[in-house]
Length: 213
Image (tube, rainbow, N blue to C red):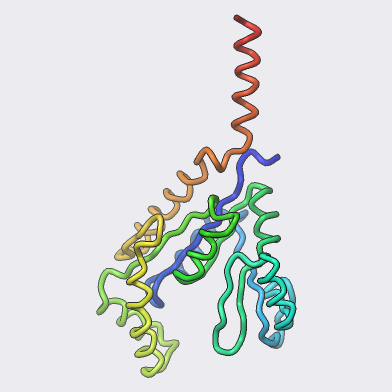
């Protein structure tokens, strides 16, 4: 048995708040932290490998896994199903490693309500202002004005669900937010439920106490 059980670390934010950058920094900080590989019904793109970028499933296979309770969360997006298979996540956290999830508030709720939800840690990243959020979307140069407008419209729907999360960080300084994120993860790893070896240690203390009494 591993000394500790891994966490299901859920990061959510509106587009442009810095979630992806913070996720990369978190994984660089702890190289044993793994990113959850999603399952999807969409067709593999050139260069994508089953089990690396995604687990590629047929629609019937996907729906059967959902019916069997084998998905921690799932959603239908732009004509395809996406979801997080429970089996690989369970194996990873039982080995003492954390799993990082990039899901929205609906995914957070589904994971929280799953049988692994007691090991979940959810963190929402807020921008310092809406004006700054738009500025970040514009300066990164990845989207057209039309796409930026759609992202901005969606951003408030995401932000309005901040209250579902365990922690909420305002990302007004990336380095400071990164340090706060690492502090949260470090502390949550020490929760009693995350340390399965504690019960055996206390049992040994009790036996030792009785022996010396």
